[in-house]
Amino acid sequence: MSTMNNTAKKNAPNTRRVLVNVLVHVFLAVLAAIWVLPIFWIILTSFRKEQGSYVSTFFPKGYTINNYVKLFTDKNILNFPKMFTNTLIIAIFTCLIATFFVMSVGYSLSRMRFKFRKPYMNIAMILGLFPGFMAMIAQYYLLKTMGLTEGSWIRLALIIAYTATTGLGFQIVKGYFDTIPKSIDEAAIIDGASQWQVFTQITLPLAKPILIYTVLTSFMSPWVDFIFARVICRANASQYTVAIGLWNMFQKEYITQWYTCFAAGAVVVSIPIAILFVFTQKYYVEGMAGAVKG
Image 1 (tube, rainbow, N blue to C red):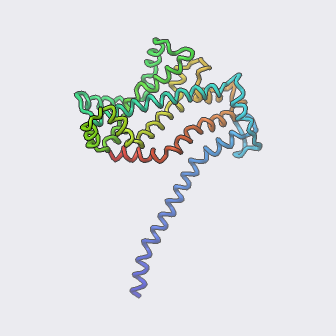
Image 2: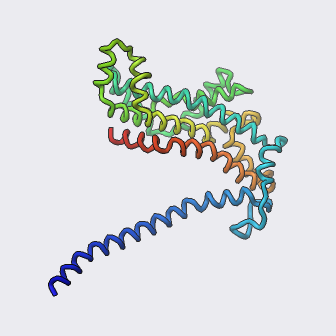
Image 3: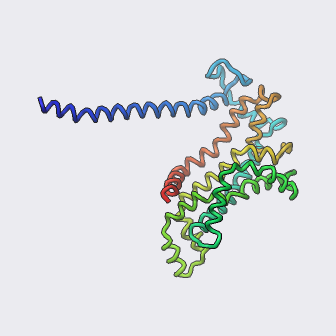
């Protein structure tokens, strides 16, 4: 009798653990379904044959690829290929410049000691509490004074707007650099390496995860931004980005004919980010883990 009681006591924690695991997995599955459902719906809508923004059923009554064809061929009203090209150019240059700024500032604050180091970090942390669009109007007038808010100069204006303050976002990068032993730098300097050589040839290769993380976030910021692009581009339709183009498809005069194209555009816009994230996901997770640990 006592043996049966002991066996029951031993099995009780296992049963409880299994039950908890089942409930947790069911809960996570429900959350995953809620998260995936809008994505699934926007993909279905991108192939929907019916025009207009209102339908009575979740699944389309007919399917077609004409929405994607129209998105890339109809250049008379909303020139999506031009917008896509503008955004890609801005995102690539912003990614390169912002990554260099952030990595340089993070390395300098992690490895070097100078007079205003701590005050700068404190000021940067305070400024980071304020949303970036608070300085949007001031930035616009500065760019306008330099003659960068008209014509093809708008691309340069947006690149400047997106990269000018990226150095303030050094905290995660600095946290990762702090996890790399300084003795490696000191040994390289003793062997005759300059600070630039230590940074580019030793520290950056060791910091590949956080470098990939910075590249990813720097590329995504201009790709999805709407506020700065809308203010700086204004009525210069030839310089619109994809965010402005997708927003225009929701306007009253366009929504009936362009709503399904909006869904197609949303799918197309997500593809570069999805591809970049899939190839860098491993380093992205490692970069965040290393930064938190530091």
